[in-house]
Image 1 (cartoon, rainbow, N blue to C red):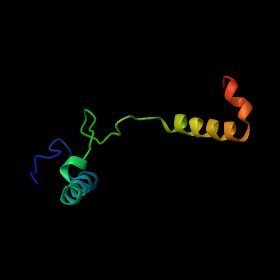
Image 2: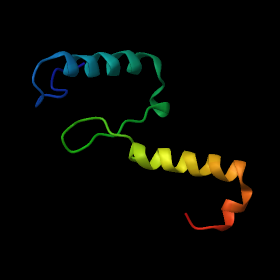
Image 3: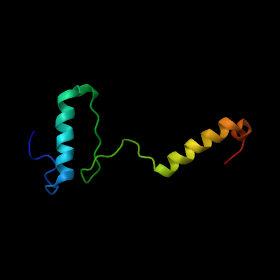
Image 4: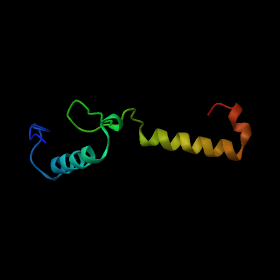
Length: 76
């Protein structure tokens, strides 16, 4: 693997951990199954980010509706 990868990053544990992960993954995951998305600064980023608070609210609303179906008809 070329050392040009993450060339703008300082040498350190985080950079090396990412490089090691990519090297391990590239050796075991077929090309057609690989997906990686990088932010402008080179950091990994999920494809459709959702704040953890929004995820919690969505999960909690689903639990509340499951236990009290009448809530389905009301605006939160």
